[in-house]
Image (tube, helix red, strand yellow):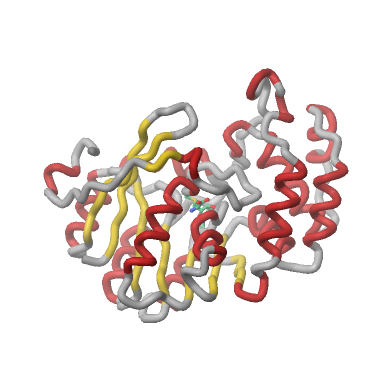
Length: 289
Ligand SMILES: C[S@@+](CC[C@H](N)C(=O)[O-])C[C@H]1O[C@@H](n2cnc3c(N)ncnc32)[C@H](O)[C@@H]1O
């Protein structure tokens, strides 16, 4: 249970998710990624009286949740938006005929501190170059963080250094699997707020909102983890409150967020997870009451 939710008296108990039990579909090791929340969101979708047709994710990042919803047949289509051009380059490559070239480059890359630094010292000459550099950076930088100021892994897991999270065959397998979803995915590089406004009143849509944490006291976390972290949380809450689409938002348990959700009459719930180090963490889920 979070520290301040009790005041609002709206906790709904739900089982702790063990992240090690969730299938990983994303090629990213995404900071603030929600793979662990997949079972909870799929259960929510399956319990709806009518299955939504479209899954809308306006702040895509590593994208585990919409990809799992598509893969598991919980929705027919997905509309995905991300503002970061590097992250977007990877999604674009995956859902394009270039996916095979991306896989080949991943499979033939000989990872080392020097080869990573050499690769990243060049300005990408093509969209594919950019996608490949982004994958390498994401998998070899500390915590998968690619924002300004991030740095290469030093010791890594079991002393494997930059190779700690470089699993070329697994990455190629995931990319191939995801490419098979291409016909059902619309990816847009752009601003999630406009995508949200476009679908907020669409009753065939389910909108999953996981913006950078820059609300309330979470300002620094968002700035440190993402290159793009300026988000209008008030506008997100108002757009969803004024629309009729089904949605789920996830936030840190921050007092400002709780107050905002309460003002809009939304339902609040804590979900817990155990990470691979067996630490328990909690996240706030906000849905329409
Ligand atoms: C918390 S992360 C999303 C994590 C994702 N749910 C996952 O499971 O990996 C938030 C994402 O929103 C992106 N972002 C920030 N501002 C945005 C905006 N205005 N429009 C779209 N995406 C934005 C960031 O680049 C980041 O990838």
